[in-house]
Amino acid sequence: MESTTTAVAVDRLEKVFGEFTAVAGVSFELTGNEFFSLVGPSGCGKTTTLRCIAGLETASAGKISIKERVVFEATGGGAPTTLVPTHERSIGMVFQNYAVWPHMSVMQNIAYPLRLRGATRGEQEREVARLLTLLGMEGLMRRKPSQLSGGQQQRVALGRALVARPDVLLLDEPLSNLDAKLRDQMRAELKRIQREVGIPILYVTHDQDEALSMSDRIAVMNAGRVHQIAPPTVIYEQPATKFVLDFIGAVNYLSGEVVAREGGRLTVAVAGGQRLSVPAPAELPGGRDLLVAVRPEDLRVAAGDGLAARVELRSFRGSICDYRLKAGDQELWLQTEKSTLIPEGSAVALEAARAYFLEAGARNDLDARVYF
Image (cartoon, rainbow, N blue to C red; front, side):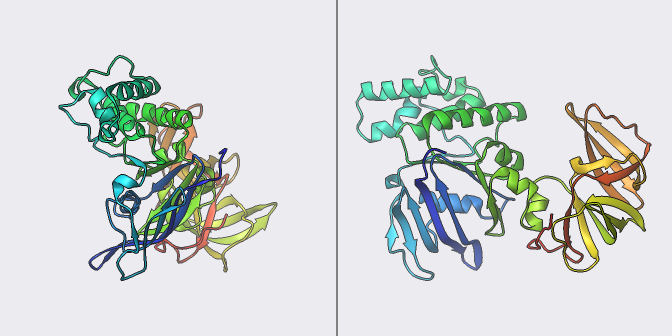
């Protein structure tokens, strides 16, 4: 990122609805022209956080700044000492349902914020034409939303959010109504447009693939709290808590006991006493009993001895293959490249190319530390 200017700063933000705390002391910053995502399951507080930044909800406590201008500040239990209305916050916003006006043309939809500001017809047409070129929609200025595809309607909503040249763009699940192929196309388009416009984006999604593929940094949220803020590779490869490990990507869990350590690898007794070879972490949880976590793509078919399993089901997914296996009473998920095809019913021995470790009793503790 070329600039380190703080685009949005959220400090100890809280939002309480009656007896329910939706946001509990959330803090983070967007710097430069960063693509920053809030990701988590439904009800985790990510959309409420976004709406507080936009001014569509009034937070209960905390501080929000946009380009170093305080737009909200309040201490717990008191009325806000600063509360800037939404239309004065210099934000653009795109919603899940597009919110384009069906009776207006593409031109009228995108130009609407400029019309409110008193821009001339010529100024409106020049700005809309510029944005339609950026959005790849030249020649569609006079069409109505009913004459557009879902992806084109989403671009109209994006154009309307960008036309007033806001300081930050807030996107709330903007691609969730699109089909899978169009969603993938729009992910790439959003990144391209952001780079060309040079605007920081705060993006809310429950889709972990979306967050991983588009973001410069991610804040993983659950139950109103942030568990980890880091770049996508760190979030995926070095999860801070069991919740992050669970939510970002798939994982197999096996209860085990360390029985040997040699040459940078551990031998762990799992699944009725069977042995699984795993890389040794830099630091282990206390005790010999562990909860071992292995991602499906990190399981390997061993050349020699390993954890004995049988392939129950194979699913071909184009570039990869998914396998459901049984190791004793334990169900496992293995993922391989398409060049490796294992027949259903095959007996295999497994080892792990990488593993994560938690305290033995951490299976239901979402805050548990992850060792790797």
